[in-house]
Image 1 (spheres, rainbow, N blue to C red):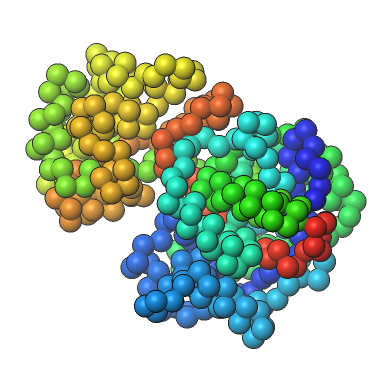
Image 2 (cartoon, one colour; image 1 turned 90 degrees about the horizontal axis):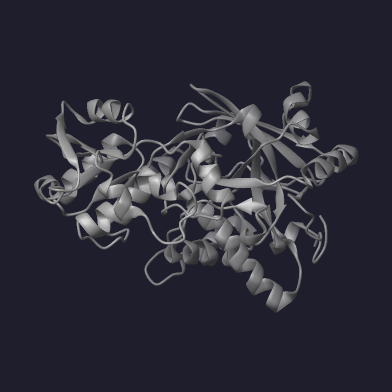
Length: 423
């Protein structure tokens, strides 16, 4: 294991990648596990039965272990030549291009750090269930099947290596059904690796996506270090993006109050906030974008209303002793700390307060459950970074960074690195 330096340490590794043409590669890739529902999973597998979703969200017949099934599937895919291991350790430049533009960064194996070090800073709380799920999968496969996503303020050798890669041939290209184009380059030059390492050694990063996977990396590291000593589990597959060059887009993750009708939601707001009706959910969201302080939209399939914290009662109720600066000002903090628990009197659990990545998904879920959609504004990146830098934690699922790295393009198996040492 590489001794941790003052800042980030991104180690080259031998990637496990699909050995297919670009057309099929597009059908093998999938979004990250936590944005895939049963309908999308089935659709991906109908496009190609070997789609990576079968690995990252495994299913098994009654009585069988789905995680062991994933391990068997991965082993068979390697034995059959569907996936092959690159000959030389590399750092990879990965580019995603959608209708909004291109994002690219470095894929490598980041040396894991305690969040208390401030080198790899989370900004959201995690839940035990997803960590246990990912831990079971990583333990069974002994692999990182999906990268986490870090952003940092760059400008040095690492950023130059990413910007100047276009003159080199790609090692993979694909277009996924969602229209996103994916391109991958491999950097195998030792001098470039050294320059990148020196550049990153004093830098720090924010977890944009993958809080549960990073927590899982560290859980697995603690277990394996105790059982086996240092090894490849001291690092984790990571996409590192210079936010000043290729910053991602940030979107809101909406909520659904399962089983609580809109009428009840509105009644319980009396005395807490100002409420006005909007023409529809999108009209409500346009209104809240112009409002200072907390504002949100509550809706069902028929009506939508704007909530405004004009008297700051909700903000004051959301403030907790020892808060880091501005944490109580965030919409997601007011929602979970004041509205969910105090105003609406609901348990703050995923079963009661569900998540949705679009307005349509939120209103559909609210309709199906007899509940209320709560539509939020995106949290500004600067606010996310400020909370993380101060050691604060936003409520779970507070931000959605896009575009997200595709799963199945690059994987990292422990067996493909020399036991206990560098790749």
